[in-house]
Amino acid sequence: MGTSINISYETTAYIIGLYLTYPLGIIFNNVPLGNSRHLFSFVFGILILQLVVGVQFAHLLFCSSTSYILLKLLPTNTAKVAVPLFSLLYTVVGHLFNQYTDYMSYNLDYTACQMVLTIKLYSLAFNLSDGKKIADCKKANCEPPRATQKCAKYALEKMPTFIEYFGYVFCFSNILAGPAFEFASYKDAVNMTFVNRSSKKSLPSRVGPVLQPLLTSLYCMTFYVILKDKFPILSPTDPQTALPVFLAMSTTPWVNRFAYQIFALFVNRHKYYTAWKSSEGAMNIWYGGFEGYDEKSGEEKGWERSNNADILLCELSPNCRTCSSSWNKKTASWLARYVYSRTNGNLIITYFISAFWHGFYPGYYVFFLSLPLLTACERVGRKKLSPRFSRADGSRWCVWGLTTTVFTHFSMAYLNAPFVLLSWEWSWEILKSNYFAGHVLCVAFYLVVGRLPTPTENENENIGKKRV
Figure 1 (tube, rainbow, N blue to C red):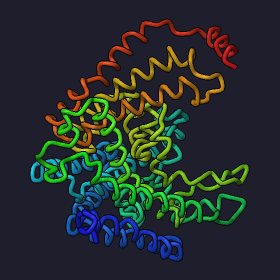
Figure 2: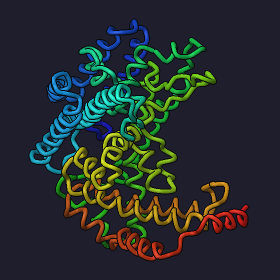
Figure 3: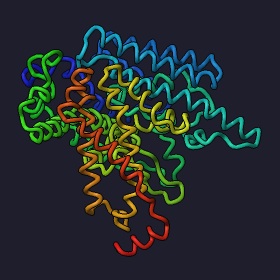
Figure 4: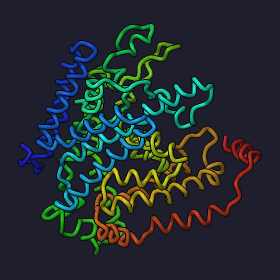
């Protein structure tokens, strides 16, 4: 089947593994609460891994087992450094090995699943450390660190049991594509404790939360399969060494080249939407994405725990921050909670960790190290220009809102090209073919707009009144 539509065996196995989680989720719903569910989650997570990556699943088993021993034996303050460092380094070594043995290849292997596992292990180490800090601060009658307070609802007072731990890290419905949610969220869903905390004592309908992402996933997969060969990024005949299509169009007018670049990258994103939306629906079958009920009103909070991408918001983002938080959302949450907030808001460190997590192809670093420049421009624009041109009601559907949306879309298309082209040579060539326009315009914007006076509060009020 995979060969007839030009899809590799590895990709076919991956797709089968993704959609197998739906019937497994239905069975999981009928498994008794408690350890039986954790065992089911672990066993079938391992079986799905064996189907998709074969014997390479042993890498994940070794990494998670070693991390479990470190979490059990080391003090929480030491473990919060040792476990994230070990899991991240294990992922890095896997990336480097693949880069050395199969350079410039997009073949599916265990490293994609290892990346999901790394987020879980990294987060769990901080959850246990935060739980210890909160307990110590209660005894000492003092305030925990600000970053700990922000993540207090995910903090753990004690180490998960053996079966809870492995049920979580190998959870069958998100081990392939995420989202890597918090252990507290996993345990809440597996044990359905959100029902006990509510006055309703009943379960909400799953029809919409399951069907909507499932149908979206199927649509995205169909869209990608139909158009991926019509709008390729890499050479269809020799993707690893032949000149990418972007660069082979050197004689084509720039407007046509860049238009092709935008649409080809748009098509390429659909393979990620396919995986994320499939996992979202599979998790919602067993309420893995359900956030519970509001303790005061009794209303449903939503199903955000399993949502890893807001497609429309991502594709029509008014700024880079919204785009980043709408794309691979749980990875963005991990970086925000356990890297950005733990390094006093250091963007450079955050983007470096994100780049290490992705791998060591130069294109990743061109992308991630360019983002702070775009972010700095947006901050200046938000401070100096938005009060003057945005609508008083905050609506983005105005001339200024549409302008920022178009600028963000063009900027991300410009910066995303090196990310998918991987190599330094191709990354440099694609930036050069676009005349380094994104970088030049960002620097010019920052220098010019940064010198403008910042509107005072009175000026903001007067501007707002004029626009009402």
